[in-house]
Length: 216
Image 1 (cartoon, one colour):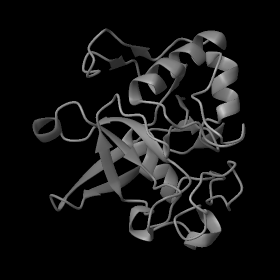
Image 2: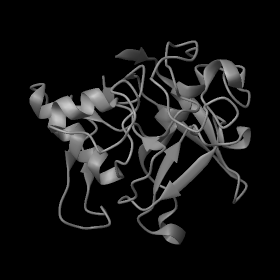
Image 3: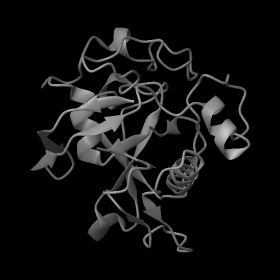
Image 4: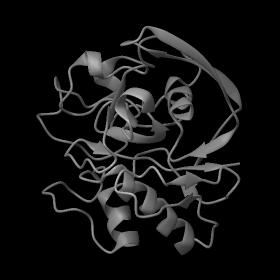
């Protein structure tokens, strides 16, 4: 995993035209999304798909991703970050940010890592860094086959969207969780460092996966 330095980020919601500042403590992030190969090795099987073993795992809900993080932590001899109950909306899930196990990034961690010190729409030329509607052929691709950002992270933009820990706007959307980054089917406007999307934590779809982080 790649060590990401302490810093700060200004986030923006384009729908409400609001911005907010976030302090980001140092953390470690996987250089690529979780692959079907890794998911299957830890979980016993990956969701059915014609995609190859080195493609990002998709058809995983937010709840699936959280439970995978705990399973991988236990398998690796680490303290799990999450407690998860039976609430179908996932609102009883809690995160121990001090635990040394695997977890999802916060939304602030995700955008801060994606930008890697840059301030533009994205950290490089779209075709060089991302699989998107214009070059993907309508399918996800093996991870780390596009150029990384300055911190060595691949596929932060394009290929698959990535679940984050955060609730999107609980006052309006209830249990909906954030996902970021754009996917293989998206137009350029969806493949931007600041683009925020959301859905119910049980959503499973063919261009949404997740990436692992660990607290320092």
